[in-house]
Amino acid sequence: MSKSWKILAFGILACVLVIALTPYVWILLTSFKGRLDILSPQPTWFFTPTFANYPAVFIDKEYLPLVFNSLIIACGSTALSIMIGAPAAYVFARTDFAGKEDLFFFFLTTRMAPPISIAVPLFLFFTTLGLTDTIYAVVIAHTTFNLSLVVWMMRGFFAEIPKEIDEAAMMDGRSKLGAFVRVIVPLAAPGLAATAVLCFIMSWNEFLYAFILVAFEGRPLTVGIPGLITPHGTLWGQVAAVAVVATLPIIVFTFLVQKHLVRGLTFGAVKG
Amino acid sequence: MTTTAQPSRGQILLDRGASLPLILPATLLVLVFLVGPFYYMAYTAMTDLSFANPDQNGAFIGFDNFRKLVREDTIFWGSFWRTIRFVAIAVSIEFVIGFALAWLIWRYVERQRLLTTLLLVPMMLAPVAVGLIWRLLLQGDFGMATHYLRAVGLLSQSSAVFSTPSLVMPTIIAIDVWQWTPFVTLIILAGLMSMPRSPFEAATMDGAGPWRQFFDIMLPLLRPIIALVLLLRGIDAFKEFDKVFIMTGGGPGTVSELLSIYAYRVNFKTWNLGYGAAVSFMVYLVVLILCSVFYKAVYWKSADQRAQA
Image (cartoon, rainbow over all chains, first blue to last red; front, side, top):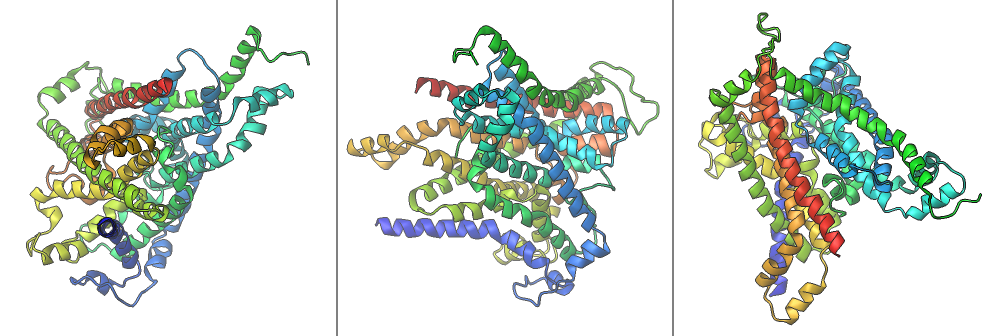
């Protein structure tokens, strides 16, 4: 009896897995299809693959710089968030002060802020500064939400390091900052790495801030995608190629940080 | 060194002095680039600023925009209730399916790592890419999903999903479910894995059946995590923009115009920035309310339980 339940459970899970993955497999296949295979009304699962779509969009349509823009924006906002956020998280983990939990909650609201509400004033603000249409504008915008992710996640990681370790380091004559940089950060390195990867993913996948803040120069891959869709005659092979390049690195990263994903997605509320 | 392990009052002050430079940059960044824009938005909402009309150069008009929004703007209320319905239906379905899947994995699968990682693929894709994938799949003439939907008779031969108004919102909900159910599964599964074994063993000993165990032990134990999942998903779904923007752009007509799409249209299509700020402010307000519920329900309660333990 229990065995047949188990088979049923595996059957259900297998179906779910097929539903979850088929759309992505389809876009992967489409990126290697020629025009006729894509436009065939009968779905074609087997076909002679072509590699023409990738150079056509990344070289001829000059989408390659967008990949670099995405990389620079994601790396830049990750570095900035970690550099500013990790010390703050350390203070939250170690020091008690009046209004600490309120300030901590305040960081959470920044994460939850709807981009559409913040993007407009930010757009006007960056216009005044002459920063619209530059990578810096997007890096800063992405840092506003990644910063709270760092503060929330790293507070938990720092709290797991016994207090005695910083006390010992300070006893050895290190300042608080010295103890943090030389002793605590190396100990928290795995957590820091996982947080960094999550920040990278969030920034890489983000669309709305980037879409509003940069139109041409410095636009990342996600912003380049809608431009490829036209009411008639969309070149779906090329669109699919861009979609694959925009998503495959993230899937690889997901495998890397899977252990810490739960903590990252719940702002440290669930350890996972 | 003659310091003792017991810190004196002076040392605590010194310690706070050392903490300030560590926490200040983060606080400043948020103040300048988030709180600043927030207040600027609130101010803009009380002006008639518009880039489309040179006469409206940002004169202060008090609460006129809000009055117009709440009393007269039927499109706003349409998109507001559409968004509420979207959030309620999508998150409920995601929760039920996600919970069931988590339970199945927890109960029957020993080596979960690969399975859960593969399940996560839909939610890790950039939302823009998700919109793109489904736009291709549901394309009228050669979409793969369209073909199979027609083959099993769920869709008539000549129609396409995104040009049939009555099908658009249900489809968007289904796609949201496809994308975000794994999120629920992942977090509920983490909750299930961290449950203590002993109450279940005791209950089995006392002869309590699986249903009793589920309702009397498992659900109460998981309550904080369930609240967390529902609120996080609720907040995110309320802000939904990317997928819908790529797939339908809010259309046909305003059939799939969610609140954030409406806010986008007012701001960046009609360039009516004063009125747009009022719309944005309402979106922010709802998210802020959900957010404080989240904080009270999840963090407060879990700290409470930690204190009791």
